[in-house]
Length: 321
Image (cartoon, rainbow, N blue to C red; front, side, top):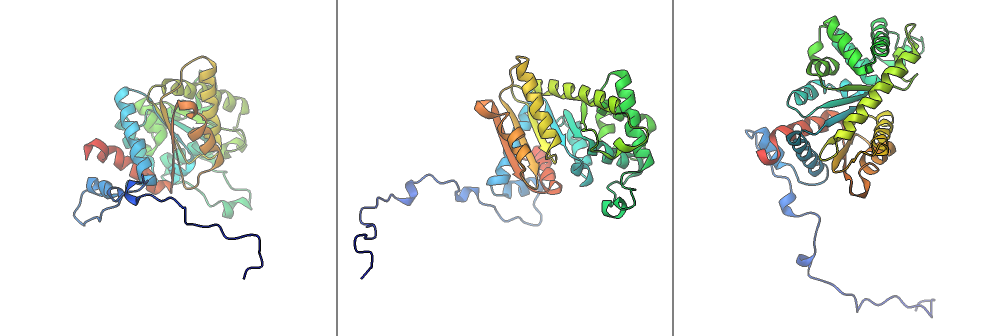
C-alpha cells in the first residue's frame, strides 16, 4: 500500500485516441530514399535521395534559384574564405556562366585565398607553424596586390572587389581560370569585398592604407545594397561560410534599402555551413524574411559536400528530372 494516502495515480480509462491513418504526419514512405544502382545517372542519384530535411531544403533553394534566373532577379552568393579553400571555385565559376551567380559578396579572407590561388595555384598556410616566428600572413605578393587594389579603388571611386579583379586580370596569373575574382571581372558580375580593418593579413603589410581600404569597401557596401534592392520579387541571397562579417553586412544592406523606401519582399535567403551560428541564422535566415517578406533556409553540412549537391540539383534536379 502506498504511503501517499491522499494521492492516487491518474486514471487512463478516459484517454481519447484516434486512428493512426487519420493523423497528418511529417514523413511518409514516398519521401524515403531509394537504393542507388551502379549504372544510374546523376539525375537518378538526385531523385533517389530522401525528400526530407536538408535534401528538401536544397531542392527548394535550387528551385528558387532557377526561378530567380527566369525572372532576371539577382542570385547573390555571400562567401567566406573556406569556400575557396575547399576547392569550390570551379563549381561557382561554372554556375556563374550558367546564370546562377549574378553577384558575389566576399569577406577579406576570400580576397587573400582567391588571389593566391590565381598567382601560384596554392593557398592556406599552416598558421601554427608560422605564428610563433611572426611570419604568418607575410607573403609579399599577397600584401602588395591587395593593398595596391585598395589604393586604385579609392582613387578611381570603384569597389575593392572590382579593383582587385582588374589588377589580377591585368597581371595574367597562371591560374586565372580558377579565380572567382578573375571570372567575375571577365563576366562583369559584381564582386563586392567587405573587410574589417585588422582582420586580414594584408592590413599589416607596409603598403596598407586604412583610408583606401575603408573607402573601397564602403563603395562595395553600397553596391551590394543595390543588388539587395533588386532582389525584391524573387531574388536569392546565399550565405556560404561567413559566420560574422557578411551576415552583419547583409542585414545593414536590408535595412538601408528599406530605410530609403524601397520594397524588399518575396525573396529567398539561405545559410550553408557546417554549424548554424547565431548571426547567419538571425541576420540572414530569420530577420530579413520575417513578416511574410520572404523565406529563409538553413542547410547544415560541409561545403565540399553541400555546394556540389546544390550545383547538381540546379542542373539536373527539379522539373528537369
